[in-house]
Length: 116
Length: 114
Image (cartoon, rainbow over all chains, first blue to last red; front, side, top):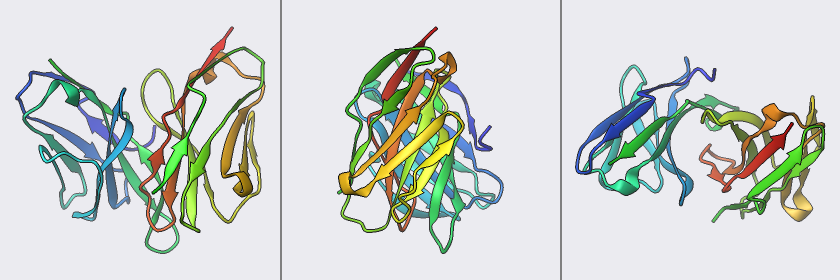
């Protein structure tokens, strides 16, 4: 058990709908990362939050947004869903290394999103 | 730009065989981190190892060992005496030294037959 909790584990929804994925980081971790894993794109970094603020952005679509709350949990909002958004969405939380950077992260079990 | 190549898409072995998973990376950073993750059929990503670019010592952990060679930009992973429970997809990843935002390879699916 990595200590990172993601809910729900599975989600099935229709095209055009909006869903929210939730992540609770490990105790003491300030960074949260979101990744998308799909068959054609592999594991893609979406976005990072650190202590409530957006820190880095990857290949995140405009239809997707995220936020990190004062209690450090994070939510990834996916809207106007398309069939191609079906994927496994991972959240990871960062452990502080020396200095200010996270040198490793631990992943949650993922949320499997199926868009039908 | 960073790139991680895992040329082996799938490897199939029989239990007790040794198996090496290859990972080749490209980066212009002088400081970086390399990782291996395991993704069993259940789907979670399990952290196995992190190596920084200044530490080329090989590492052994039980049946697992890692060979980091900067000269060839490779970070290979060997499982000795493989077991059925080792069946999983293994990902190699690379992140810049300043922050953890790794670029993942496409993964190698390892199937260990009894």
